Image 1 (cartoon, rainbow, N blue to C red):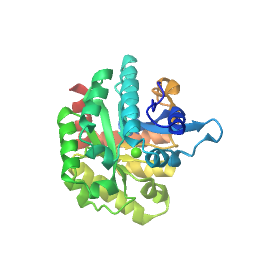
Image 2 (cartoon, rainbow, N blue to C red):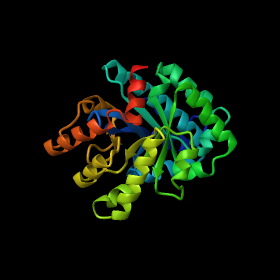
Image 3 (tube, rainbow, N blue to C red):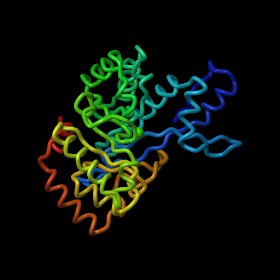
Image 4 (tube, rainbow, N blue to C red):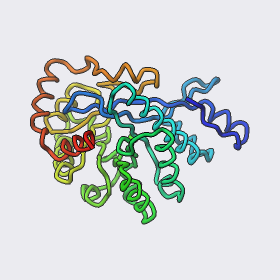
Length: 289
Ligand SMILES: [Ca+2]
C-alpha cells in the first residue's frame, strides 16, 4: 500500500510518516465460526529503532500533528483492502479506529465518503470505532457526524467498553451498532465473578437494544468458553489470531484450527441460541441487503 504522504510536513515528520504501515486483526463470529471483519491497526517500523511498540504509534502521530492526515490515509487504505477481499468472494467488513477530534472535523464525513467512493466499497461494510470514554463527552457536532454517516449505512462501534467510566446507560444513549468489551473485562473472566456478572449484563442489555457484542483481547480457551456461553457474538484476540500484514489476510479467511472440537460443539450450541437473536438478524439483514 502507498505510504502516508506527508510531503507538506517538515523532513523528520515526513520520514516518520513514511515508516507507517497497516495490519489487520481478525474479528471472528461465534455464530458462523468465520472471520466477520478485520480491525485496521497502524504500525511503525523505524529503520533505527525497529518496530515501535504499537501502543506508542498513534500517540506519536497525534503529538506531531498528523492525526487528520493519518486518519484519511487509514480510511483510504482500509476501504481499498476491504474491496479487494470481496474479489475473493468473501463478505468481510473492515473496522477503523477514529477519534472524537476526527468526528468533530467538518470535512470528516466527506473524507469517509471519498474513501468509500474511490474503493467502491459498500458503506455497510465499514465500521468506525470510537472509544467509550470519548463518547461520554460527545458534543452535538460529533453526534450529527455519526448520524450523517449512519444514514449512509456506515456502522459505529463503542470501543474499549468497560475501560472508562461509561455506565450501561451510555449504550442506550449512543448511536452505535456494536459494543467492544475491553480486554480489562475479558482477561479476568476465568477467575473473577465480578467480571463475569458485568460481561453477562452488558451482553444481555446490548442484545435487548439490538447491538452486537465483540469480546476483545481473548487469549485463552476459558475466556472463549465464558463468552460463548454468555452469548457473545464475536471475538477478537490472540486466541484466534494476532494482527496480520495485508499479504496474509487472504489466507486467514479460511478459519484456522484455533477452535478445538470442544470449542466447535460449544459454538454450535451458541449459534442455535443466537440464530434468531436481534444481533444475528441484523447481520443477516446486512448480508442480504
Ligand atoms: Ca479498536
